[in-house]
Length: 160
Image 1 (cartoon, rainbow, N blue to C red):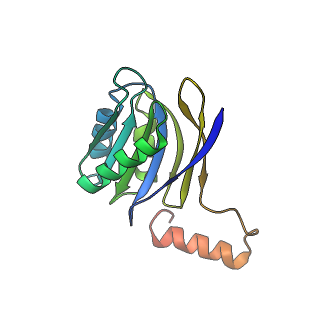
Image 2: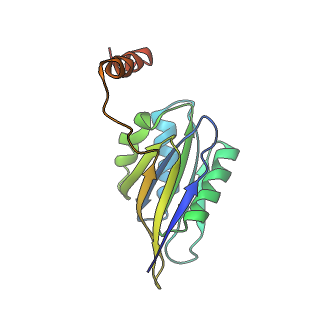
Image 3: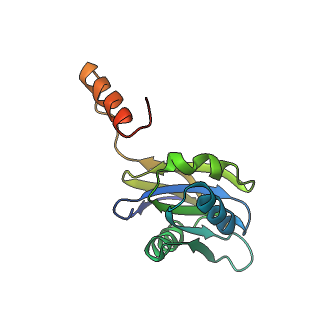
């Protein structure tokens, strides 16, 4: 078995969600879930088909995000994984809608941080074994850090 790391290029001002599914209709279901959840969301999704033609299937309403998603999915090259880039929304706005898609098995990450996808390859194929999302902690928050966190969440209207 070989283990590899695939660095994902995240477009400026976008977030990425990486997950695993089990059916070719995933790309259409993600498309429907997103446009039905967040009006005005911009997105592109790439899905690695794990049987039959084994193609990267894609959907989206933003040409550049769709191309980024296709490229990232092809670079990861793991069966039944999907890569979803979004703009004009945050992952928190769409996570429940994605989790309610019956064929989605797992969400590995939702982030705007630097991202590496860890893969394992055997004679059968490749699979995602985890992700590295951002940087490691540099310490424990202090009072000023707690204040900054609470102020930020209220400034962006996620807390009252």
